[in-house]
Image (tube, rainbow, N blue to C red; front, side, top):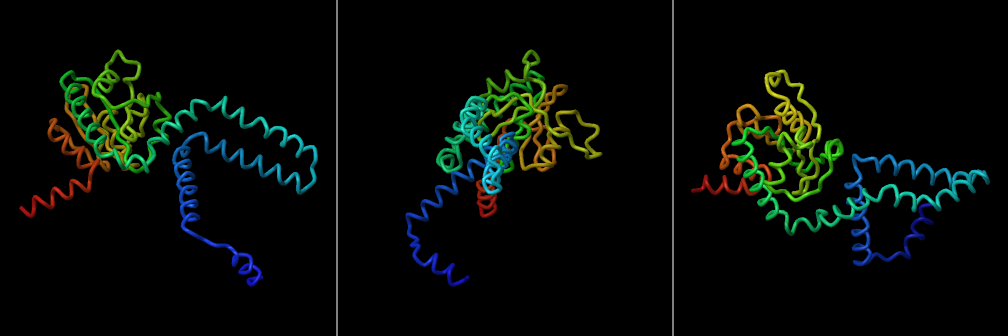
Length: 269
C-alpha cells in the first residue's frame, strides 16, 4: 500500500506557483473563518454541510426520493442565501477590504488618530458629566458583544462618540465597541465582573472590568456622577486620568512594542 501511495505522488511536481496558490487559498479561508466566527453564519454553515452530506449519503444508499428532493433544494439555496443575508454579505465584503493583510500598511496612523479622537471625546464627556463606556478590541474578538448592540460600522470621531452617549440618544444605554479602528456598534451589553472587590462600583465600571477579565480589550469609562475618566486593562482599573495620561495609557495599550522601546530608551538615557 505504501508503494502505491508513493507511486501516486511521485508524478506531482511542487513549485513556487503551487506554494503561492496554497497560501492564497489558506489566507482566504482564514479570513472567512475570522469573519463568521461567533455569528449565526457558523450554525448556517454547519447546517449546509449536513445537507450536502445527506445528499451524497442518499446517493450511496440509493435513496432516490431523498436525493431528488435535496438536489432540487440545493439549486435554490444560493439565491435564498443572497436574499436573506444581503446585509451580512455587504458587511463581510466591507470588512474583507480591511483584512489584516491590507491593514498593516495603514494601521499605525489610523490607530493614532483613533486614540486622539477618543481622548478628545472623553475630555468633553467628562466636562459635561455624561456617563460613557467605550471598549476597544485588540487580538481577542468581541463579535458576540457587537451583535448584542446596534451595528454602526462608522469612523471613530469625537462628535460621534459624544452624541451617542447623550441622554437624549437612544443608543446611550450600553457600551460602544471599537473594532479595527472603527465604531462597530453602540448600545452593547458587556459581562459584569463577579469580583467581590468590585461590588461598590457602578454598572459601567463592573462591565468594563468584566470584559477585560474575559478578553485583552481595553475599556474606557467616564463617570456620570463625578466625570472621572478611568481606563481598565486586564481587569485592573486606573482612575482619575487627565487627557495626557489617558493618551499615554491608550497609546501603550494599542502599541505595546512602541511603548517598550520608549521605556528602554528612557532607561538608557
